[in-house]
Picture 1 (cartoon, rainbow over the protein chains, first blue to last red):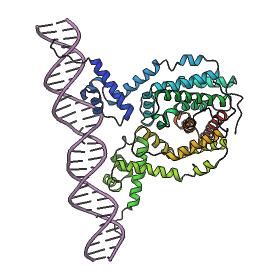
Picture 2 (cartoon, rainbow over the protein chains, first blue to last red; picture 1 turned 45 degrees about the vertical axis):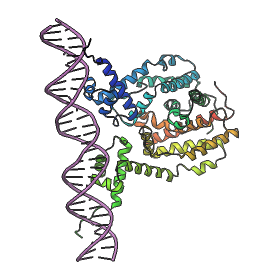
Picture 3 (cartoon, chains in turn purple, brown, cyan, yellow; picture 1 turned 90 degrees about the horizontal axis):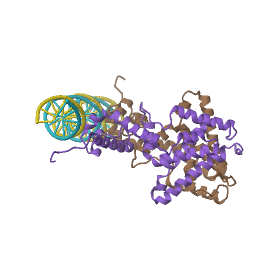
Picture 4 (cartoon, protein in one colour; picture 1 turned 180 degrees about the vertical axis):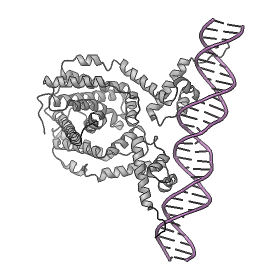
Amino acid sequence: MTTPTRPSADSTRAAILSAARTCFVEKGFAGTSISAIAKEAQINQSLIYHHFGNKQELWVDVKITILEEYHNSQNMNWDKLLTLKNCDEFISEFIQYRFGFFDQHPDALRIIEWQYLEPDPFQLTAYTPESIQTIIKRIKYFQKQKQLSSKYNPELIFSLLLTIPLGFFRSFRDLTANLSKQQLSKLKKEYVQLCIETVLNSLNENSTSYL
Amino acid sequence: MTTPTRPSADSTRAAILSAARTCFVEKGFAGTSISAIAKEAQINQSLIYHHFGNKQELWVDVKITILEEYHNSQNMNWDKLLTLKNCDEFISEFIQYRFGFFDQHPDALRIIEWQYLEPDPFQLTAYTPESIQTIIKRIKYFQKQKQLSSKYNPELIFSLLLTIPLGFFRSFRDLTANLSKQQLSKLKKEYVQLCIETVLNSLNENSTSYL
DNA sequence: CACATAATTGAATGATCGTTCAATTATCTA
DNA sequence: TAGATAATTGAACGATCATTCAATTATGTG
């Protein structure tokens, strides 16, 4: 009854992981200190070492957490994407998937950007090397089917598909800063539509070349 | 004759600035220590404070150096760009400028990415707020002239123009890792061409909508 | 040559870094 | 309830952080 109780080990672990995530996402690995994480989690600094080993392992665990969220996200339905027989649908879905995922998981995008600048043996990647190859094969297939212009290197086309959806998040934070939720949502939809239309109009087989 | 001579103050300053640039570009602000810079420049640590005040001011000086390189770069000829009366030329030149500049100044891209993640009162920006407004006005002008689809928010179109040329540098470092100089150069040209064609084909007035 | 100025040095500052550890406290198990 | 186990604490470690400063050395000026 009057015996002091303490939070479960699991909840402590979770608090540390959550705080670490907050700190790492905001300040990166080098910019985050163990003491800052402990303060954010409101626990004793030594507990981090007891539960996670050291800073590096905690960093990896945060990344794994985010990676699991990615794989559990219905937003990026990989299997469904690969069954699409129509190239336009494929591209349209891919762009929507990619935009939607990073829109709903801004932490993931930020971690990816951090580890682009702060290289780490454990790389959090949205796509495995295999899945990248699968997509590129798919692009080649659509090129053979003449649903997609064969003019360009499929890797470059993939690179374009990867980049375009992220433009909204990278440029113009001022533009979106003072918008209401409805306005922001509308702007996002418009951007996705712009992306899809841009790619489809240019890369289909009968598009005219301007060069 | 036998009197000992020491390097000029200017050359010391230059050595520090160069070393700081190397370190900051690679590891960012938080990841770079004054001692690391001193070691890289092969000078005494205290000299950094004598010549630059403190770490923050050195960081700003590095950014200003890079910004000056940008403004002195004939690669981004702002005035010429704004005289172009033809929308296709305008977009084509803009994309070529942007790709070319970051291709020739990878440090600049990296610093911009660092300060995106590590916010700083002094922001190194490729474009001033005024020049951004100038470009957006230009896009609106082309929309009025019906050289450009009016379907989309001009800010979003600009966002797309900003993003697309950078895709080559951000994704797929594996793809370009083992290429010869000729192969790499060819791939770059192909990517720029892909970007230009993508935007032009989709955003001109008579393009068909896929949505 | 003498003197002022500026550049350079090396040692020291207190703060904070990541990490360890022995001691304490709560929980689980027999 | 006793003893083992696990969670938690606070103090301490050496290393490194950014920064300061007095002393030294070279350079420029009269």
